[in-house]
Length: 188
Image (cartoon, rainbow, N blue to C red; front, side):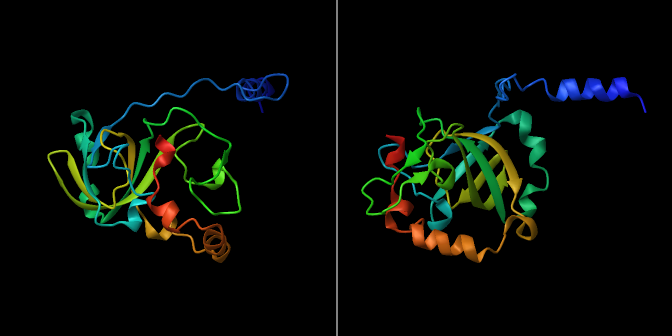
């Protein structure tokens, strides 16, 4: 075995850790592949989770250079869309839902709040059809002109994990009560 090669790999692998053990990874840059067009704005608000309001319609305009990447996507009924919360300009470590009677403050990583260190959102949307690079979708929860970062097919065999513990804590914490479903004041 070539030990020089192994040592080189270790040096390269540790390249992003400083002497204090802190991660010093360089910036990561993404380029949108498209944009949402919806009736939701910061003034009208948007559903907390679009899947809970399946009648919410919108379209996703995919930029021309990505049209070929849509090949066979129309075979799927549901898709996962990753997007950038571009209306958010700050983040908070602890979240307390506005106007909430919840007794809990939540760490941002235990919420779906858009106020995150990396404001990335995701939705599981019903794909109605694709025509000329336009995806017609329902169950939308994104604001108009929200940049789309990626699209993946929803695969029930790997994307749907049955967890009694998560279902119980979701209910206890009220993640699906009226405030969580309809409030979008986190953007203001």
